[in-house]
Length: 85
Image: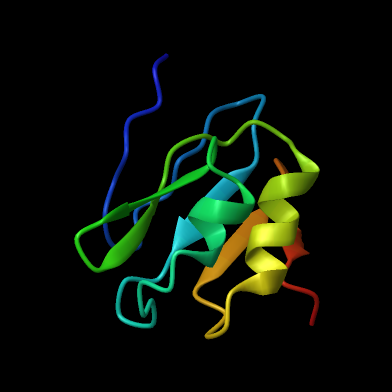
């Protein structure tokens, strides 16, 4: 199953991966996520889109670094991994 970029609140996910979402209504397009985790995020116009749900510390760092907390990373069970609450 090939993961493709998606916009809005649609996640990138699969059975063996994390579920990564970007809330397009909150995203300000700062690009911090794409710079921190380029395998996981890219800018599409003025918003970030998730590219990969592969487990990786960089994806967590990107979610924690988002200035408006628009990124959410969940594990396979649905538990929020980032941002920290």
